[in-house]
Length: 195
Image (cartoon, rainbow, N blue to C red; front, top):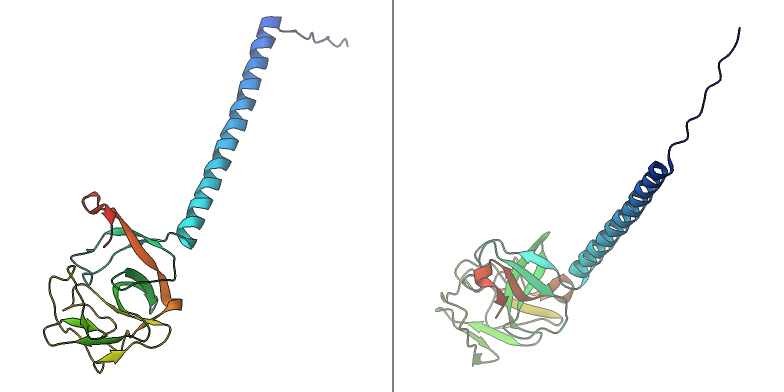
């Protein structure tokens, strides 16, 4: 029995060149795609790290800060440790993040009358951001001295806000603080600095 020889056909040079170009293109395309994906992953990781460590982004829930901030607003906070009176801060409380305004710092005396007027160290606090003054839920003995290492905070919607006026929340320690709210990014109608 005779075995037949298989003949090997060599493709023409132009077909080989075309196939070589296509292989080089796909190799280059794959390298570019991998590089782009690695770059996007790196940028996303850095953005998440910065957002978590330096500029946390938060969404507002509830109405305790109206009219300054309303339910659904998205804000950017800045991690810092030096807070002034009337700064708006976010802090941890019972596995939640609350947003309130700094009224007094450690060692200062806070007093609130029946109409909701607030005095700090005997001076009436100017509060243009409060539309509805009220004593609210207050079970602390007034005047009240803020303990060392703590901040006395209140919401802008005084009649509904549960804050340092209630012993349930109390004054905020520095370890609880997420940061100072500096910028509202959503909705676009509220876009801008927080005062």
